[in-house]
Amino acid sequence: MIQILKDKIIINSLNFVAKDIFECGQIFRYKKISSGYICYSLDKSAIIEEIEGKTIISCKDVDYFYKYFDLDTDYNVITNKLSKDMFMAKAVDFGRGIRILRQDLFETIISFIISANNNISRIQKIIENICKAFGSVTEFGYAFPTQKQLLKATASDFKELGCGYRAEYLFKTLRLIDDQFERELKILPTELARKKLLNLVGVGNKVADCILLFGLGRLNTFPCDVWIKKVYHEYFEQGHKDNQISNFFVNYFGELSGYAQQYLFYFQRSGEFFQKV
DNA sequence: GGACAGGTGCGGT
DNA sequence: ACCGCACCTGTC
Image (cartoon, rainbow, N blue to C red; front, top):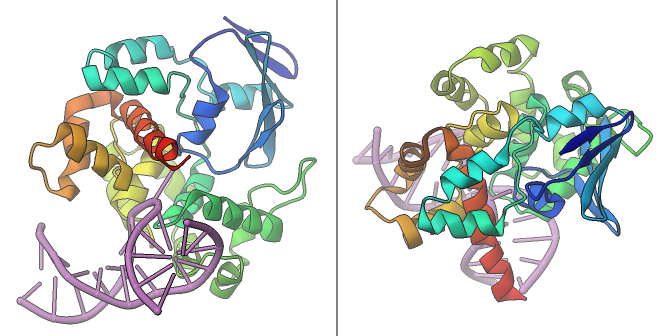
């Protein structure tokens, strides 16, 4: 099913669809190209193309992207379990190729602080600006800056790069985190890790859950944004207050919560696109 | 001009 | 603890 070469990973599976993976809301550093997608993580990049029904991932660091795309996880098991719920079956069918990426923790923290009350194209632009201004030069462009590099930025630097009022959040949070902070987060149980994340400036419940899910691989979380609220009120309504919706879904989906969130989010949002086009 | 976008911090109860 | 509100900025 999966073939690993020196600078390529070849995947022969229906459970890997680049469009679904990159456009389901979990990542901002990717670009659509004529032959597929190119994505960036830290100082690395990979090209993802469909050739003769197979997915080819071309990159220098095969080990890194094998983990990044979480290729050891069998999504057949996940989609089969989730599809037992009638409504989920539709969402899973729509986003069959989704995989939750194993993103870098630091990059995830910074990126999702920027994402708060913001739209994707602007988030992408801001992150790109920050990479250009503070990241190292790579063969493809600019790397995501390290914490050390970002500590050189002032709040007004961030503002000039388009962050708006999130500039202060970034400036302050950068002074609250370090390697030790990240090491502790990685070993703490989900609830305690969430509490620790909520101490950061610009990190509320939603952003904390995104960091837990995308940066720490905690699948027992369910980030709740406006789209998920719509899903709840349209299809799962049971009288919960908005700030209890995430808990409701975690109870409902258990260890599959993170996956379920991605399928539901992507599905709900696609409806909006169809209506607009 | 005004509302809204993948929320959060803050001040007032 | 639980409200309500202001907030950068681009786009409709």
